[in-house]
Amino acid sequence: MATYDIKKLLQSIVSHGASDLHLVSRTEPQIRIDGSLKPVNLPKMTGEDIEEMCYSLITEKQKKQFEENNELDFALLLPGIGRFRANYYKTLGDMAAAFRIIPIDIPSLDDLKAPSIYKSLIQREKGLILVTGPTGSGKSTTLAALLNEINLTEQKHIITVEDPVEFIHQNKKSVFSHRGVGEDTNSFSTALKFAMRQDPDIILIGEMRDKETIEAALTAAETGHLVFGTLHTSSAPGTINRIIDVFSGDEQPQIRAMIATSLVAVIAQALLPKMGGGRVAASEILITNHAISNLIREDKVHQIYSQMQMGQSGSGMQTQTQALVRYYKEGKISHETALQYANKVDEVSRALMSVKQ
Image (cartoon, rainbow, N blue to C red; front, side, top):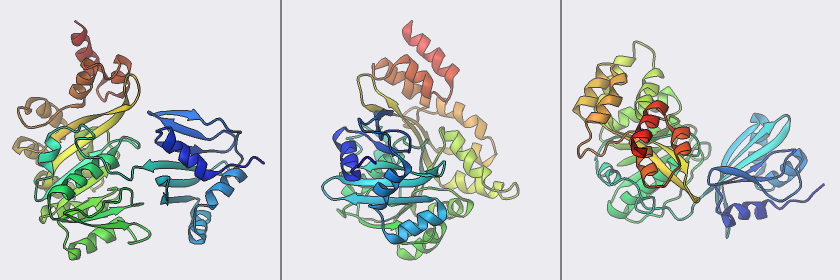
């Protein structure tokens, strides 16, 4: 049996500038660099190798939890190496694991070269701001940078509810209460119910995954709190539909009215491989204005995209197509990458053709 040092493997993520480490039996350890998986030059692993390595990082309570559920999510701090989000799971009866690095130094919006509208959004006193996208699209990093900006400039009480807690903010001007589901609270919806008694100014919900959580988030946003949340949706209008579809038909008019009143913005982002290495975030940005509120209220979400294309002057709104075409013009992404990540392939294809001419 080959001997592997899990701490050295996690150190290799840091030293290679990778984002993830994957341990799956019958293959060598793999790390993800700029979005692509690459094998580490080590022998193939067995399920026993992985179990021995992974069990060395967790408590007896966590082992029991994993053995009962065949799934385990947790955050891990290795002094001198870094902080990681980990997930243990089973594949064909063997244990497997995925680790993602969480930067200890939280990036600023300027570090991320984020659109300037983001700094205006965080000045809102109340409402719902959603950052959406598939897994690995940088949602957590964008949210951390938004909260970091508030921490540098405003005296606020910020409650984060996550599973597990990812970025840990040092209190600068603001005070953070970080709550991990399973450790500090039993569920997202419970945490949100009690958050109202904890005098928050701002609430971050790591994942709006069920009806109770979504309803609690909308209520908090309506009652004078600034609420940040995430969903696994790839476009701004698609995000609104996803929220509405969680509710039954007779509840939907009321939910549409709540969204129309409380939604401030949807940032739907994807991380694209950059020419010459690295990655760049392409964001579709929907900012709720009077016209968009009316479309949501009147069940005309399908018309929001064309409203986004029209209502842009000085609003900070942009479609994903515009973001992709701009990066292509600037030489940051290739023609193939733009099409590969496009939500509207035909629209992007036509726009790229006109750039070439």
